[in-house]
Image (tube, rainbow over all chains, first blue to last red):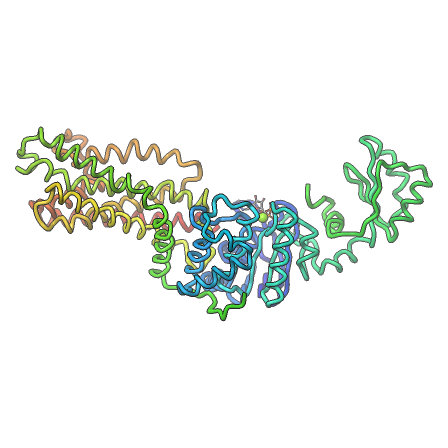
Length: 304
Length: 268
Ligand SMILES: Nc1ncnc2c1ncn2[C@@H]1O[C@H](COP(=O)(O)OP(=O)(O)OP(=O)(O)O)[C@@H](O)[C@H]1O
Ligand SMILES: [Mg+2]
């Protein structure tokens, strides 16, 4: 569906995307995971054929965005990072007006709008203006709007940022349904749980480059251990302890507020630390996540 | 979810622009009452105050071509209102499409291109002016402001004048990145003086020769001359052609600039 080779995006002198290779297959959910400024949105906008690439190769749905932008966009659904709904129109009107730009008939967009409001649980607000809707409702409407043309490929730029947990789960549920209907999804996020939940395959992006690629479980297996032991200390007490524990695990990360010990068994490591007289304020044994993968790859945490 | 789906497709350029108009029309149907003052009442107040009130103190003379002041000022008032309205529609509403509401970003994510969006925007302004012009002409008819059927054509002249002003102002809006302070400046130092000194209320022969060129380069003066020409007569074919060409040139130059800046802003 999407094929990028050595894809580059420059804004003036600044290189936002620095030569990435991406291959997205039909029917899969593909993710771009990365911190602020990684170049996720820049990449998404190139795929959405609204932003011309500076260098490299890119085909979307087998077409070249530089020459066939409108034809590609006709078959895409786009959820931009920032909602750009028409706030003075109603929910229904937003869907209908937008659908018309895809050359759909009035009766078709009318029917489709009704279906999509049902899908996004917005039927009750159908004839309300968009302006006073909650952030989560607006986000759902933006997602509904992106589906008005029955896209083959759906691009979602941080679909759930700013939503409460319940709203996020609703969105995820809807995205699963779409995926099961065969829609290809490309999602950007800086939530590792979202990436783990949604994505069959993802790339970890940092500073305009791809740091790693694989399925969530693959990445965790490759770049982290099964478990992590987190030790938290009172301010100032962490420094002297590092030397005491750094041989207890395969790898140790020292963060400003805690020490992470990567090991097959967190409990065992914790016991041995206790035996050496280490007394953290709190400790936690958990499974490794993409957050840990990211930390390993970039030396920084994902969410600052 | 699964509607037997004719998926999205690309529509032709005119159609795309027209769909944008349709979108505006959806908005207009909800909000037309809020536009009543500026497009309906205000020009009427001017017509009554200037044409009938102030006009009662003006003797028909050489300057008015021997006509009553009401007849003299009615066509030009329409052109001036159209120019003002067009500039208004092309400043903050356009900037909002880029910056606040960002609905231009939504539109250009569909098969519709930035150029077609601009076309739709201009078409919409034209339609608004046409509607407002028709209302004005009908009401002015009740006041006896028209001498002949040229009143039907004056609507087109006013619309053309307005659209010629809209094009370059949209280019300006597309290059505005702040909150639009320059639009206030534009209104104060360009649109207002243009309205007052382009032969709307008095002939530009009253302007000192050294400054008269300011009226000559104003699209509104050309619009006013044409508006009077079609309603009152007395305009030669050649001068009329000159005015049309001037308005066309402003529209074309402005439109090309706007197109350039629309792409520069939306396709990055
Ligand atoms: N239009 C632009 N002009 C100049 N620089 C830009 C532009 N768009 C993005 N950038 C820069 O490119 C870099 C990557 O931005 P991008 O929006 O792609 O990041 P992102 O991964 O989506 O980040 P976030 O998680 O904050 O959304 C940033 O440093 C940003 O400042
Ligand atoms: Mg982004």
